[in-house]
Amino acid sequence: MTAITDGLDLQKVLKLDFDPKALLEKYRAERDKRLRPEGNKQYIKIEGEFSQYLDDHFAQGRAERDALDLDVDVVIIGGGFAGLQAGTKLRKLGVDDFRIIDRAADFGGNWYWNRYPGAACDSESYGYFPLLEETGYIPTSRYPDAGEIHQHAARIARHFDLYKAALFQTNVTSMVWNEEASRWTVETDRGDLLRARFTILAGGETMNIKLPGIPGIRSFKGHSFHTARWDYNYTGGSLKGKLDKLSDKRVAIIGTGCSAIQVVPHLGESAQQLYVFQRTPALVDPRNNTPTDPAWVSSLEPGWQEARVEVLFADVEGRPGCEPANDLGFADQQRAIRKLAAQAAEAARQAGVELSMRDLMELGDMLYMEGVRARIGEIVKDPATAEALKPYYATWCKRPAWNDGYLATFNRPNVTLVDVPDGVERITDGGLVANGVEYEVDLIVYASGLEVGHSSVFKLARFPIVGRRGVTLDDHWAESFRNMHGVLVHNLPNYFQMTVIGAGLGANYLYPNGKQATHIAWIIKRCIDQEIASVEPTLEAEDAWRRALDESHSPENNPGWAEYGNARAQCTPGYMNNEGDAKDNKGIFANIHGFGASAYIRHMEEWRESETEMPGLTITRISDAVSVT
Image (tube, rainbow, N blue to C red; front, top):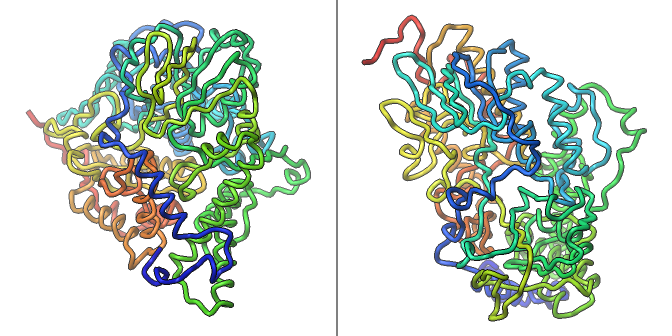
């Protein structure tokens, strides 16, 4: 709490059921016992001897094809929704000479891989699924399962004829800028040699899976896999659960993030014994999924999806006077916290106490989390288990989850919660050791998440990206992330990226990601039409974008974001605060637009409408290109 409240007994003054100062101390204690000095380095990059964790259990063998040797306008790396949107936007502008490369056997990206039992959307589908109006599709429910999401990816690809451009089950091995030819040379593990005027790194490459660096992880002689590579051959069942091959198996799942929240109910239902190893409890709200209302569908008018997303983002961003989105998720959660803060403000007014906006929002968050913890106590029957499941942190210290079966699963006699704030001690040939106890298991499921945005540990791509004069992307980002609009990078001509680094977030990632695709396609089309050989941002343009991001984080310009930054520093460690080092300049939230996706999107739109031609870019026209020896 701030100094203005240090001398106040807020519990008494505001007639609260808890002591805010004592609760804040509890938050700090829970954070401190989970901090680890190695930070992000506690995780293992999946490569080399761990490569089996990348095996594709969904592909029907490896499709053989001849190696390609060709020139194209664009290579898109990644066949998830980012790559699909990039291909779609290019198609709409008449740019058809491109290839989409992906290691999976079909489109979908994370939604190709994330097909574990219970996998489902946790952002409202009407704003999350891209291109609904263009493809004429309406999701079956507010939060459909992963199968429907994957099918929509395929629907987009069919609608825009993207399959003919796809190179599946293919990994890029290098990407090098050829100055003389003004083209990128892209090589793959299939022996392909593609010479592309432009390259787009489409998001998914930043989302490789990771493993916890637990001592002895190589020792386990049972079966193991990551949630993002679910092995139904071993477990039986499907997305709907009913994992019949686990009926005589002892199973451990490590992690309690969003994936684990969805899969635990199905493991608990099917396994002989389930051990859930929890480092940090999850914030789990009820899902209350609802089928899509046909009457609502019949009322929709052209442009409905853009309008819906605008309302959703405005609500999540807390813009004054915005229409309630009522999404049963992120928007409702944020609105509930603001309502509780308003109630605290009214209680303070009646008590004649002046509280800052920071105090009020912190109180609103505490009140909300008190409700979350109370619900756990109501559902989970064993008091000790219920207490261990209670999250003692602010709402966005760990990404919130929504599920109707997770908490009740711990009432099953075959399900045991193993609370390990310090992490699992070690893995043996037959199981796991935690809190001095060995748990013998047949299967270990790693629900340990994805590599996200910290290049000092995990690279943006699994292959070298080499630009002008041999400068690599890693070289350019050695000290800090630098780019323009989150999309263009100095020394990498005609290179575009679709990630959160230097971009803006909101109610979901795919909407601003689609706006990035629009921005990139516009630049590529402009270059083709005006016979421009290459474009790249100047260092000054990167500096200007860095200043814009920093200004969007400053207390003077954006006190709400600045306070969020302070709050994250007090969070339990996780990817939201860079494993406890929230001030590291390579953490995710140090490098996104503090005013959110809407402001970020306006920046790109205003830039395209500028009277100056593509300001901030060094433009080399084909007629002016000079051969370099």
